[in-house]
Length: 176
Image (cartoon, rainbow, N blue to C red; front, side):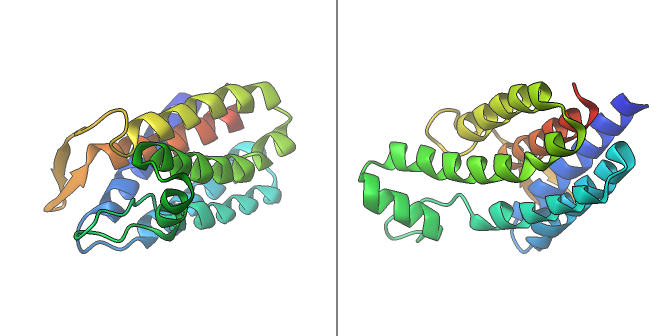
């Protein structure tokens, strides 16, 4: 049963994350619904109301990974910040992803605080951070592709990122 929950909820969160990144889509699918789903699943698995602290995922999921592209896109404030400090596009992009990933991991540290599964959290955190850095952006893996759902073009990259976030959060709740 727990494996079914892990996979199905991760798929739903991956699709919500990808859908929120599509043109003319509501960002709240990613920013609000994914944390809310993780809270409800967490309440079921941990039996602790402290798990609703995962709603703080709204913060890192609202920051934005965008890097400035001259003449096309101003990027996110975080992308502009790191590019101004680092002055190297590739390293700045990795720093943006490290920053957001670190904030996500701080929020997710609530899970082992509740269930005492620190080893699971540390292992899952390494994998999640690796995915955030490698899959997102154009520094390492590029052109992951697109797929169509609900008459919208969704990015495989965003599906992988939000699927992984849910997968590793729930895996930590389960202690695996």
